[in-house]
Structure formats: structure tokens, C-alpha cells
Image 1 (cartoon, each protein chain N blue to C red):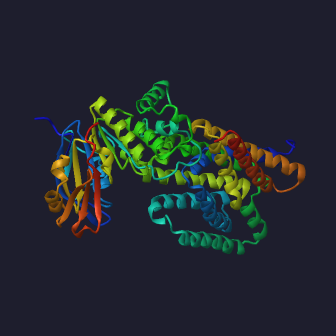
Image 2: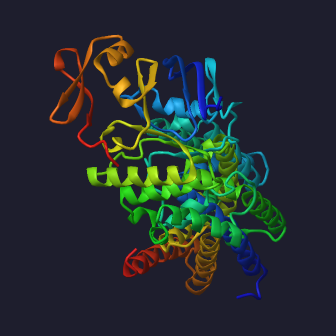
Image 3: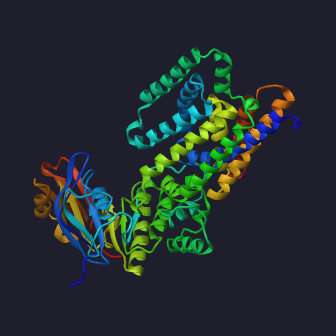
Length: 268
Length: 264
């Protein structure tokens, strides 16, 4: 039997005194492209931190490729949200290069070999020209490409992407998703792709990991995005409505739309 | 000008301060912690005044208090963010404590002026050995941590994910800022540390240099400011601190102009 890329067993994680993941169990096969869905505070980032070994679970465990997680020694590339501006006018190339052997003590020299590695990572996401420009002058989508290049350094086998579509317009969301999907398929990567909006991922993802109220549900879109499945997950009645080719997840009574997704396009 | 020993001493001291302030300031600006140097120099003022009161060198008191405060800031970094009233009160208390110590000094007026605005021409040749040791130690330590520090400064989340200890780096770096502030205060005084530490570094970053060349350019600009200030002070008989502050503004404005012309 193939070892799962990521396996959570009875995993409980708290953040700020609140239990955000409560005895969650799932197994993600290698090479999967998984959309991680959930509202604010549902535990998406906490799950990523647990997978990277940056937080200690209260209970349970996480195994990456069958091994217990350990800080800084996982075969994991991480792409955070670009929340803050980089000071000054440092170029995209230097921002990406900073991650290469960034743990090692010493001066931030770049050898010819290191330069070639950075250039190769930039080429993989078609960002070599962008990288010559100051980071501050780049759009959100262009910065995301640099962050993706940075995540690809050191040849990870698993990519954790934290809201890579945040602040992008719909066309850029689709383009970014396709770029990540192509890269993942070429290199056989396992991808966990957190998002509030699964719309741009339709047709690309193999499965959905839906987080709510501390619980998790992993399965195909058709298995997870159903009224009974999500009502059980939320522990309260929610309704999954299909209308005009779109999929809406609404709270009981229709007051709040929890998530929506466009089901019209299932092709790549 | 160089016939006088105090001028030769001043030029060497200015070189050593620029040697430290350039690279430390580059990281300070990159990390958005420019006001840390200002804050540490305020706390250092209290330490320096207390040291003078107890008959110890001002540099020793300044250095110790600034380094300890810097490390404290690094340890408590999460808890001081957004607490500007508390920070302001601590800085005011430090300045008030410094004023109290100076009150009990018989030569308080001269000491206060020297601490607040610098007295580069009053640096003794024997102090140069201390300054040189601090400069070499500080830059060597920065060289050791500069690669992970750069990573942590640009992408803290990714750096943490790759196993970089952000808290440790914060503490070590702010300790180095404390040392750099102590050295810089010998040249510019407590109130004008910002101009030698931040202005050259900000100009270097504005011009778009990479890390290694950027730190080098920041050092060169700091040296131009410091030596230029000394030379103009010699010519005009005005305080070197004034000229250094003025040159700092000119350097940053010029860098902005060049960056603007280059469309950056």
C-alpha cells in the first residue's frame, strides 16, 4: 500500500486558546491536488503549521511521507500570503534567492550554482523577467509567482499554498491555479491549496479537504459538497444549492452564504 | 587639519562608526525597525548618564543599557507591537532618568551636550581601541547571522517554515543595533543616531542594490556623511553633528531623486 504524502491521526491543534482542529484524521495520497476549504479561523493555516512542524499538536500526530514532522526538515515548500510589503526596493530575484540555504549561517553570497538554481526556479514559473524588478512595483499576481518560485527551491515533494489566490482578480485566479497545477503534475507534487473560493480550482483539484468547527472532511467534490455531508460537518443544517451552474453553500434559512463554487466548468 | 591628533582620532572614530552603521542600518531599514535605533539610543542615554555619575565611561554605560534593552525588545517583540503609548512612556522615563543622573553631575551641562549631540572631537585616542574592538565584533557577528537574518527579514513565514529561529535572530540583531547605536552616539550624539544609522541605509535600499552591495553602499554613504560632516565642521566651526544630519538628508533626498529618474 502506498504511503500517504500527509496523514493526520486524531490531530488536535489549538490557536489562541481555541481548539481549531479537534481529533481530525485524514490521509492524502502522493501526487494529489487538494483544495483546503474553510472560513476564517477554520484552521487552514494551523493545519499547515502542524504539517511543517511549527506547532505542537495537543493530541494526535501528523506524518509526512510516513515520518513524524520536524521543524525545518520536511520535504515541503511553503507559499504564504504576501501580507506585507518588503521594505525598500529590493529586487524579486534577491527576495527569492534569500530562501536558498536561508538557514545556513554566514554571508548571503550567491555562488554560480546557487544563482543557476534561483534562475531555474524562476523559469519554472515564468518569472525571470519579473524578478529583475523591485518587489514593491509588482502586482499581487506577480508577487505570487515569485513566492511560488521561492517555494519550489530545494525541490520539495509537497507544496502547501496558503491562500495563493487572495487579492487576485478572477482571470488571474484561474491563470495562477493552472500554473500551479501544471507545475505540480510535471513534478509529481502533492499540493494542498487553501482558498476561500474554490471557483478557480474546479476541474483541477482531485479532492476537497473541508474544515469547519474543528472537524475535517476529505473526499471528491461530489462527495463533500453535498447538503448531508456539510450539515454533518458543521453540526448544523446547511444547504448546498446548485443554481445556474453554480454551487452555493448556505447556512440554515439562507441567511449567510458560506461558500460558492462554479460547477459549470469541470474541464481543464 | 590632520596635524592635530584630535582630528585624526575623530576621522578614525567616524570610519569605525560608519563601518558598523552601514550594514546594521541596512538590515534595520529592510526590517522596518528604523525607530529601534532611536529608541535604543534614548535608553542608552540613561545608561551613559548613569555611568558618568559613577565615574565610568559613557560608552560602557550606553553600550550595556542599549544591548540589554535591544535584547529585551527582541524577546518581547510580539508584546510591544502596537503599544506606542507604553513605548513612548518607557523612552520618556529613560530620558528623564538620564536627566536626573546628569543633574547630580558637577559638569552636567557639558556632559549633557556631549551625550545628546555628540562630541566627536573629544574622543580620546585610547577610546579608539574600544571602538575598533566593538566595530570588528559587531560586523563579524552580523556577518555570521546575515544570511538567515536576510531570509527572516524578507519572508518570516517561509523562514520559520524552513527552521529559522526568528526570535533568536531578533534578539541577536537588536543586541547588535544596541552596540551600533552606542558607537554612533559617540559621533552624532543620542538624538542624531538616526541620521548616520538610517539615512545611508535607506538611500542604499532606495537605489535598489542587492544585499551585499547594498550593505557596502550604505557603509560608503555613512562614511561620506561622517567624514564630510567632520570636514565641514573644520571649515565652518559649526558642530559636526549638524553637518552629518544635513548630509544625511541630502544623501537620502539625492537617492530618492536618482531612483525617481530611473523610474523605480
